[in-house]
Length: 345
Image (cartoon, rainbow, N blue to C red):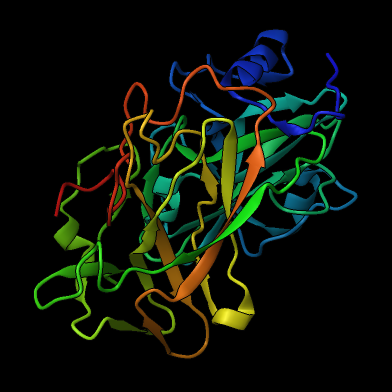
């Protein structure tokens, strides 16, 4: 199978399913029925992991060759294992790639992963960059996992990141600024919650338990009566975009890292928005983007409407067979919303 890169774009779900059918994407366990999203593929943890003392890029070596230099101990995830906050782990994924000519891939954390402040990055053998998979790559996939605020319980099959497959180099169709809501949709008046801050000494989050945790045990609600919020270094915040986000059915989007010129903080670990998110056709009109915010070395005063990120839109190669939210979604039509692991506030 080869792809014509004269018509660059992101593969929709039916293209991903064709790659699975031909073996270009394979796995050590049968694929889950809901694993293929409208323009991305959820990736699953296998049973094999390592606690490491440092992050790394394999460069000229294979990942498991490089692991010999940094591994503290190996871990079997089969019974379910707690990955401790402040520690770094490498986990082999269940999926494997044999990318055909003309196709590259890029990974990003799933939205639910970013919303619990778990930092993840994809690794490939001989990879020179995180999250990018080169044309023609044939080999296993690995995930660096670094819980920041909460310790997490995972097991084989847990999904922490997702893969987008691209034909050629898709053009940027549009770049839109994203502002933060501290006084509009999410609230702003006395008694109205505009965001959440992670509690430092909370318990363990089981990433496979949906609606299984009391949010009050993990989050502190935030208020902004003056439509501003002081971000403290080292703290993790969940906020919402001031603008509705809509991803047309023939496009997908990625939330790009913050430009240092507009603030020294990181926004939105989870960067992919699938086609149909926030659209009327898919029943999501008015949906906001949820922002995962962590400031760097100094306190930062954030004001209502301030630009905190940018959305970059790219074309699909064809209309997807299904849109985001069709068949069910935890985040379509969302406003200010914690991850799916928590019951309603």
